[in-house]
Length: 115
Image (cartoon, rainbow, N blue to C red):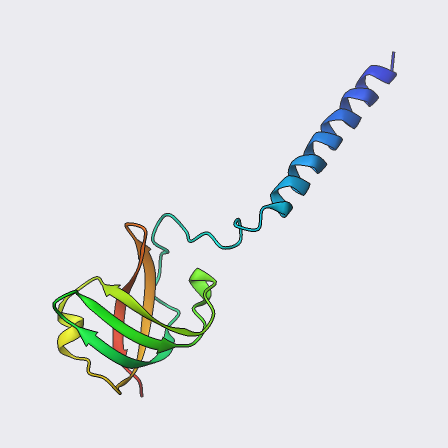
């Protein structure tokens, strides 16, 4: 009767392997942004301000890699968590920033002048 536990173990191992293989086939799995904001603004990314749009609450940054979002370097617009950040920035400024996903959108939560 040792074949039943062995068979059960084999079925369980096969199911786990199939589930892992299915997850690996999903190309969008690695592209999804976290649903919750990431804790800690410890990682800052270097950027150059391209445009500031206070009316839309938007800052356009040419930035390096953003590790906490697994985002490569590019130029893109971000919402800001605090409208006051836009008062301190102008096109051409070198800055360091932290971005988190807030309500499904990449949002700058920290912005400072680069040293």
